[in-house]
Length: 64
Image (cartoon, rainbow, N blue to C red):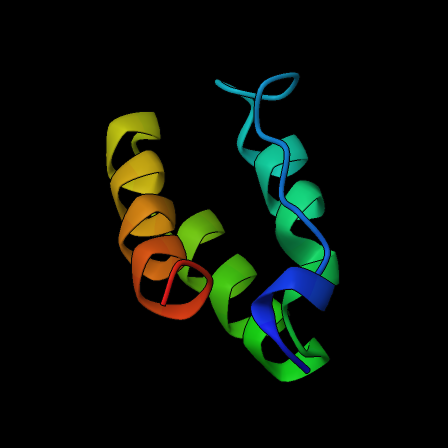
């Protein structure tokens, strides 16, 4: 599957809402990747740390 065939992740409508951000990237991830991301992100207590974990994971898994 080439990158042009992959579904796009549109974060414009959900920025600031962790649960919505997770759902927006779900089509790009396998079930295992999504569960790992969800567990890591929601396991953090502070919003800023959740957002940081989400951004790091998205940079590594989705953008590459």
